Length: 122
Image (cartoon, rainbow, N blue to C red; front, side, top):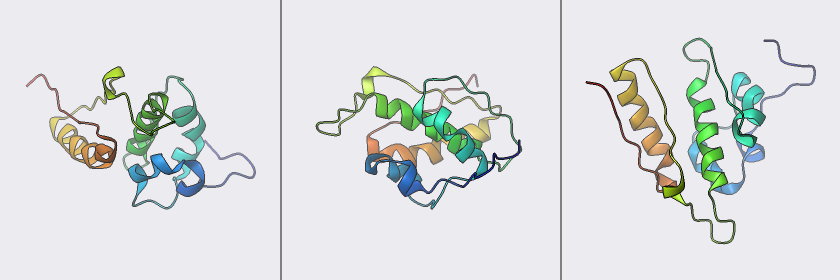
């Protein structure tokens, strides 16, 4: 899809409150697909189905939804998260990709105390 007129990439510092920025520590701005899906992925409980080529940014869209879940269960007074109140499930078609995502998400969600685990049928 073509971006709408006036479209721009969202800078991380502008898109997220301070608490959410560590998940995107090595990123200056969201890419095109992430910027286009930001409102739905990070600001709503809407369901999403993202179909895009390899390398388009689907993993970071998934991270947006995980941060939304964290934010929903964040205590604004002390910044803690009710981690036992929810679960996020990421489904991948191959075991190797699952292992890669466990490492990726594990590092990026560690500052929030989130434990990332693998579950497979193998």
